[in-house]
Amino acid sequence: MGKLSSKVVLVTGASRGIGKEIAKLFAREGARVACTARTIDEGDHPLEGSLSTTIAEIVKDGGQAVPIAGDVSSFEECERIVREARDAFGPIDVLVNNAALTYFIPIAEFPPAKWLKSFAVNVHGPFFMARLVLEDMLARKSGAIVNISSGAAIGPGRGPYKTPPMRGGTLYGAEKAALERFTQGLASEVYGSGISVTCLSPSQVVATPGVLFHKLVDRPDSPRAEPIELMARAALLLATEPLDKVTGRVTYSQQILAEFGWIEKGRGIGIDVAGSGYSQI
Image (cartoon, rainbow, N blue to C red; front, side, top):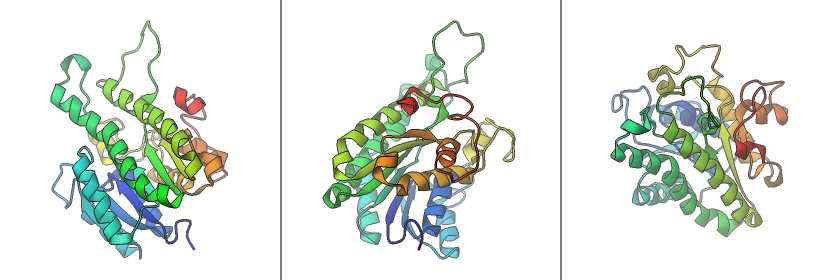
């Protein structure tokens, strides 16, 4: 019996990277996984990864999964995604909000259309998806929502600034900070209904296809990077531990895994350096 046996899970951004790894692990733990993303087949996107590949790998391992192509920046699309997930597997037990869109552009040069699109995916999308799956969770007084954040939510603090910031990170950091505040607010709203809401970031950079494309690390085995499976395991922990142990937590992969004894020790954000303000309250 896996930790998610008989559960229905919906994972956004499941075509590659962290979302794909979460979908695969959750399927191995017995979940029936609805995987959604915009990339259906290999070659549809410049980066490696697709829903077809994710589903094929889950099925090859003996898991159950369905692909649902969709764009979480649209409420109507989110309605269809959730409807198709329910039609395939039934009411949603666990939602993982992982889909993200990033443009590395300084504010002085940021095109308004790209600003609005990024905000729609990274902030509106998690609200849309949570709003829709809560119909199932509130009715049954159970469920878990795991939001995927980033160390970018940790601001640069007050000046003077002696080192240059990461180019174009202001919007993405603001979006993830908003997601962390949303997490704790929603957690408090639905606590009485037995629903857990948490937020998770990597303790160290994860060498996903997008991270490698933007040259945030130079290779998958960079000593600055953490194995991608740590994020998947941390998401599993947050989705399955009892409500009072985790709900409202804004945390980091290696921090939470070490705290619960799932790894012996960790490093990075949450351990060697402090996390965001929301992770400390």
